[in-house]
Image (cartoon, rainbow, N blue to C red):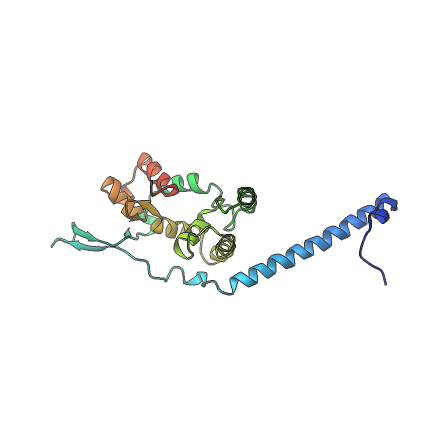
Length: 226
């Protein structure tokens, strides 16, 4: 029965053609092993994750607004930890959409939820730094972290984040994901979502944002507590 193990002696004595055959065989086995490992990890973590299809129907806390008798002017905006007003994607100006993509994820419309190169680069830095400290997240991953999972910095949570991001991209369009992201991320000062952030910092609606105001707001989620 032929064996698959290739010793260094066999490799050294083989012809060039045989060496290439050996390399191809080894690469094939390694590729199969990696594929089975990734599939196993995916199945192990995916079984306990929430369904991405329920993301748009879940409860999202919003502020309670009390208007005057005309219904046009807000007298009181009552909220807890999160001051939020959800708006449609059409009410968000192109300026805030493009500014957010430029700062957070320039290849947002080109990837499928994760950037493998960025994940590997972040993982390498995490390992060298002896701790999960690096980012490397797409907008989809950031939305998953903020809205579905916890923000803890562990390798298992990053794996769950990647799995949910891939699934989310299959369920929703890029515009839907960007809209949900802009409606929920923290901007600081208890302002969650672009509408609440615009009202907090500029006293206007998100649809009225100018380019310079959008650029300023887009930079806040990177360090909202500061």
